[in-house]
Length: 601
Image 1 (cartoon, one colour):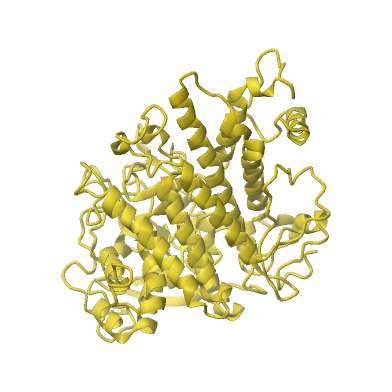
Image 2 (image 1 turned 90 degrees about the vertical axis):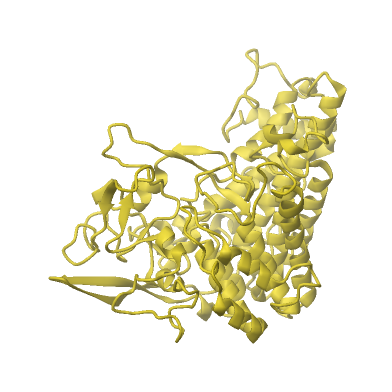
């Protein structure tokens, strides 16, 4: 072991693992390990990877995910003192910047990965007596460390990369040595370019692919050692997840905000990476080749953490977070997060047309009639029913958002927009039940739908919507697979019986089809945290994200109900980029702040 490595080990031991311990990191009863016998405690070394996994976000109800819809135009917060709400509306302070915790967490994760990777200590440690099993475990842990480091650096780049005050497109500090950002001297740390960060992430992804199994599924048991790999590793990164991560990185890199010279080769790389992730599902995990395997025509169930649609999932939770956060007080919730009128309007009609299209059939006097079936699976509106999923005749709650109604805006713990989130909620949950039922949930870091949208967006930029020879699939075919798919409750998809709007947009060319793709991103992935990152990467000016948002005013007079769209609030940002946390700039004087946040230094 090198002197430097011993120094880092002694540092982590002396800190007493202040970041929190699990069984891997806890000392033995005699607390006797030190720099000379450190290698005798393999669980401690393996614990670096375990701790890096423990730090991954595991709930959509967080700044990492659902807040991304609120920072944009899909959602808002009931509480006007929420730190994310204040940031979105231009009244945030350096001292209560909600994204500071993401910055700290991600670098903590990178620190653990670097401790494991330093001097190949993780790869050369003996974990098991059986040589064959030990070699396999060494490999997958090495792959985990590279994969996790890639994930955390991409997460940092996604949030904090941007144009700096000196006009350069900058990334975030890259650490490949075990430097603890909370304790080390960072006075000489500067920001690398955005491209350097992309290169490092891709390098780590490619390294991870060398060591990780193609998929954490038992059907690969002919190639893998089941005690070490296969389903026993589910909820860990695998080769498929790395393909999806690479596609996500390259899509952002190709997007207008980060691709000012419109370099088509970036779009081409993103399309190829997404197609590789798609082919993995279709060819390696496809239903035709694997019993019970992935079927692109099957409906997707959010409450199934083992869904074959997922490329990788977080830790599994079993609680009522969605229900208590989304429902109004009248049904046991607090309405913390609520949809906007802008998101409601983004859902088209049952015939596939947008509501503002002449062929849509949309009726402003009856705005919730004949809408895209995905709307009814995502949004609760005035008159919506909460029907127990085990008994269709058991109506547990009916929303009344009209003036004077129990769920109307302005009351305690009700939505200020007149809408409530249905997506993610478990329809077997009722706080009034003698025994309250909950369901499993997790974050799906990448899923099938995301890869189809990634491919469609990138391929459309290179060859347009109809070309299916360049990549073996057309952008139109990818979107078609999304719109044709049945919903969780068996409802047919919007395009299952013909999709004239899709056809019209495809024939109209790449620019028209891009509009459809962006709409599909919005309705398919709402509340999953994509919206803010998407609208920023699509924009060339901050004016494109500073939007006025609206609510619905419902008035009921006898049997007559009227609907009026009313102003709610505005998004107000000084630039497209998020600021580097103030304290990080203070710790690293060479760090240049992002454009628009010159005072945060």
